[in-house]
Length: 61
Image (tube, rainbow, N blue to C red; front, side, top):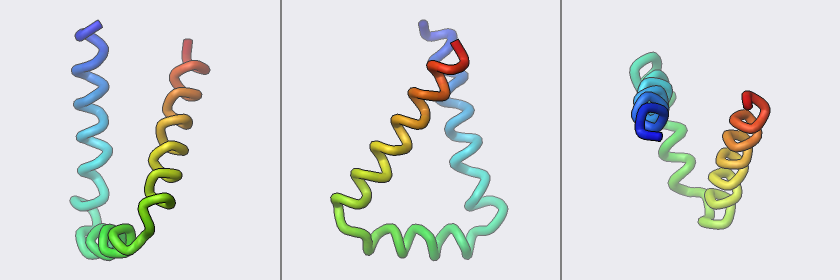
């Protein structure tokens, strides 16, 4: 199991780091706007993101 989790986490870190590396000003603006969103909207976005990941993993099986 760990042989899949560690590379997956590493890939998440690479993808998450791309935007601040490529365009730090846009990333900062986006994070500032995200901080202004209500909790329910952020939870909805987080849930949608998790479900998209689960669906992609399911389809790859």
